[in-house]
Length: 198
Image 1: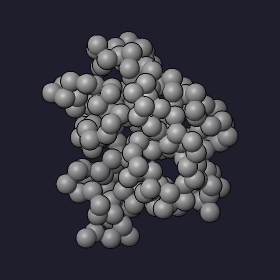
Image 2 (image 1 turned 90 degrees about the horizontal axis):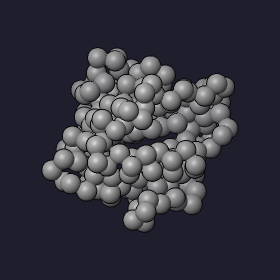
Image 3 (image 1 turned 180 degrees about the vertical axis):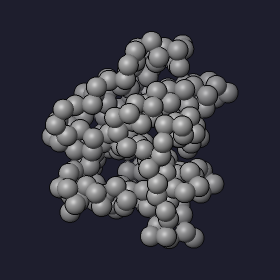
Image 4 (image 1 turned 135 degrees about the vertical axis):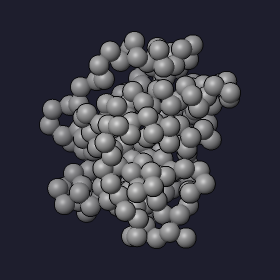
């Protein structure tokens, strides 16, 4: 069992964008939301990785991307303090190229996220992903604690959308308060969660 306090966390560089996107896709395959986004199981991971690469690339430019030393766990944060982060360049065209026949589903999810996103200043945890074989060993906790330390020191809240009951409960243990879920058309929930700085 790895102890979160013993896990080294590093800020990642743009050269690792594809690796981070692939790690997120691998970890998110089991989620009900990704089954709705890409119903074809044989193509799901590749489509997800291409979509996530757009967002990770954007975070490398306008946000913060962290990983454990072995890159088995990654976290992607977007600051929403003062001036808003601009949308990714050529997003509609890039989304269509990445997601193909399922583009409308990803666009619908984007709209849901935008409609439920809070307006006060905060940092948004867009992704926290751990390689499936390493889950439950404190890697995600180490990444959360690393950035929460900065948020607490600067008095900045954190926000995220939990995509499973398991992740919702993990984030609750780290001080996030859960709000009423919003749902995909098939009923799959996302729980908005907010954490005040300590």
